[in-house]
Image (tube, rainbow, N blue to C red):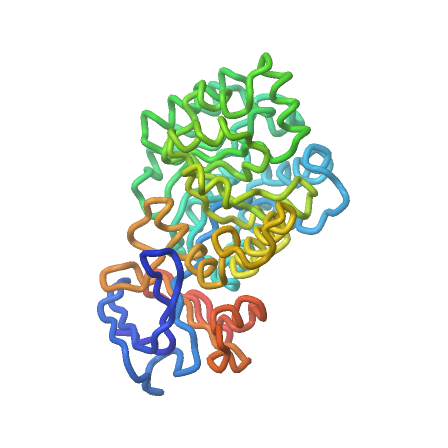
Amino acid sequence: MITLGGQILQSEPEGYATIRPGIVEIADGRIVGLGFGQVSNKVDHGGPDALICPGFIDTHLHLPQFDSIGAAGMRLLPWLQDVIFPAEQRWNDLDFARSMIDRVTGQCLGVGTTGICAYATVDHDATIAALTAFGEIGFRGVIGQVMMDRDAPPPLLRPSEQLVDQVARTLDRFPPDGPMAAAVTPRFALSCSEALLEDAGRLAASHDAIIQTHLAETVAECDAVGKGFGGRDYVDVYDGAGLLTPRSILGHGIHLDSPSQDRLARRGSLIAHCPTANSFLGSGTMNRHSHRSHGIPVTLGSDIGAGFERSMVRVGRAMIEAAMRISIDAGHGVDDRTRIPSAAEAWHQITAGNADALGWDDVGRIAVGRRADLLVIRPDIAWLDSRQPLAALMFAWDDRWIETTILGGRVRFCSA
């Protein structure tokens, strides 16, 4: 048995996190004991001033783009052509892909990310390698082979029939109900023929699979979709292809009108808010409050590598800052708590909030019976003396505070 002691992060039903001192007991990969009260210095990991936290969950990231962080000064479509597509072509070399996968898993563990919704590339073998590696380490999540059959460099294009066959075989090997599962991942409407989008929708329906794609990230992209699909709007294109389901994770969703929001809400589809990527590419600022008011579930993702922060704590902070900009621009100021999430809400979002939205009932919370995907965080500031300890941690965050990352009850990262 392993014991962790410290200030234990708990998520409340109202959607915010709190802390309580206590001890967590782990055995056979699960949390088997949880008690609140005085923390002994004799625990295996932690101590009275440590934070014991569920592992962070990142609902939108691109594994082959970790080496592309910081390519600044371009908008989305030129950035894809000049930076991202060349980077993703390198994954056609399986040895290179495996080497990078090893580095990416290490970086995720180092920043406390234990759950992912990730894109690989169009290469089938590289996708299998990523699913295998993340699964063997013990990550929770999904990884999808990117589906593209047009408007990308030839080395990144595949015939629709080939993509559907490969993704179907991957879904059989890594089924959607597994701890590390395959996903159906058409990149976005501009890189997919209408036939491929429809095939992807049917494939996801036949396997009850998670769908990952991008939606309404930039105005130029939305305009191009309208021109390429006979004047139809972006949401209608996806809806017609059967890609809007309660298991659909739509990256960005910045430029959506109210009817589109209503349709997404009716379909139960999720929007993965990616505030650092949106600011980096100058794509716009997503109105989280508006989406939630329409009834759209909103998750949070780093969107590496347009996103420049690997740490989900910093992405949570960026979520607060984006909401503050929206509120100020709308004339509501900075004191409207209905529009601007608190740090406690952000801590909830990057743990239980993301897990709940994805339907992952085995992670995201510290509770008896849950998977032991946990972090031991030891800040070097007097955070417990703050009037708002969780805000103090979020706004002063240092990745070096992560002392131990535990996946399935096994220590997978230790800073010591």
